Image (cartoon, rainbow, N blue to C red; front, top):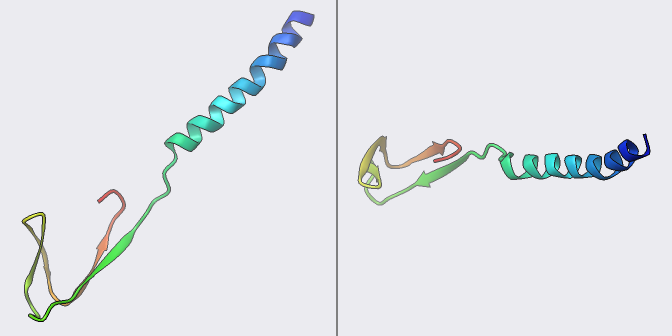
Length: 67
């Protein structure tokens, strides 16, 4: 019984620390943002990385998390 108590005394904090560390490393809060695009040419197509976004200037584009 004393051995079991000693093992639990050592292992329980390690398991808790490992669980907290895992949560911290894996958890990523959702981040959203926006981009305001303004030009001297209203109505110009907005391209990102050479691809059309479907938006034209002047506008604000909502950017979802992970993009």
